[in-house]
Image 1: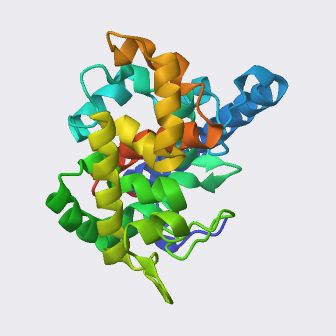
Image 2: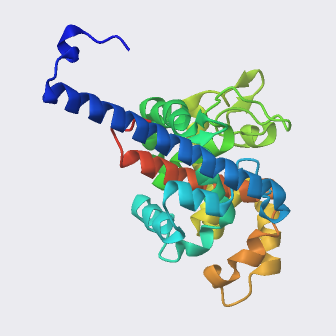
Length: 287
């Protein structure tokens, strides 16, 4: 190694600086390397254990993997959600935080999945655009209709903020309105289609969600109705909820009876609320 004349001297100060620079470089590399080894090991366990597999494509990590790598537990998640929006996440939120919710949190936040910086991608591609471009519009309409803060991330659960997305069932826009529902709520008529217009579609979504809430008087059910349709959710409620109504104790049998897509829709919304709260608490976040 060729050193400058200054560093070739016997200065104890220079030697100390070089030692600590090398030490911290090795330490950082060791921590990153060890984390990747841990994830690879857990991924191998996941591949060999079919029981972990989730019905939701966003849930690509095991619960143990997520808890270990993000250093959190279910109580941490519940507490964060209640602090974020006590209207949506009531005192008994434990029953809403299932294994898939935890796995989806891992999907959005675990740093090294296939050695990509997943939490940085989530921060750059979802969190920042939502705060700067979409949330100000959403909040304006939410205030008019009394929609809770937790539903700000509903279009992310629907489309990952792809405002021009058209689904296989011809649902379009951030709020994924089908043609029939868009016609019902006045954003599709004749040759005019406002499903990709942020203001018009958000106003229609607020009216739709308000109507769902009037049906159920419970916001998680309103979200399920938004995705799965009122008739389908009502049938499931009639089959699985007994009188007197006790949502926390009766929720599980009802929830697992729903279509997988509808389950995943609510699970993603819950997970994304935790993810956005995670970044809210780290305004200077850098990977």
